[in-house]
Length: 270
Image (cartoon, rainbow, N blue to C red; front, top):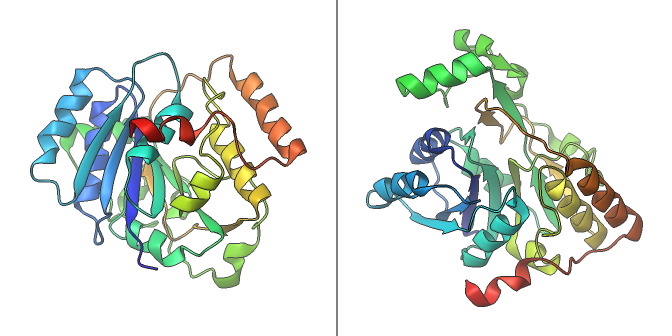
């Protein structure tokens, strides 16, 4: 099967970070079929930024927005997938810079009945602000380049052919990052996407992974292959985290695959 990749980028009122992400997309060696911005209620500044890229963008650039009613990443990701046209989905956050072979590596690792779990190298606050202010491209940096002292977990930038070790934690949901994972669209659809009862920060991505595992999918590690460069930003985790943890535990215990509050609520409006 030829992959038609939809890159789903989640954002909220961070046009400076999103600009860095879009610039990194322009440097990709292999373009996705489309980039779909999943906008969790940003102001018009984000729309204006996206519009400024659209005319010269090398692939389709789609902006999916809903009203700001708090942190609703599960909902806006479902809406973005409903609008997408690809048969393979790569999810990232709007604070993650892509290295040139990012899409090509996700495509290389893609396997039926599997999802790919990527990882991230973290920039310090000071260095993040510096590269955004000066518009510096760091997507070609390697683990031991002199500037990589400004990274936390800089070893994540290494390139290693892990082979069979990519399957070591094939049945584990732990450690999968919502800012960097991918799967076939049909598997996302058959689980009915993200559970939209998850509102507020935390665990909506983990809960989806649990249901994919319950369905029989297995995990492929994308470490040392599809690492993203994570820009620093402040985080407000909020009081909903404990409620979302309880929801996650229920999905683990019940072994459920589909959510009732999911993707199919948006297919008619796509």
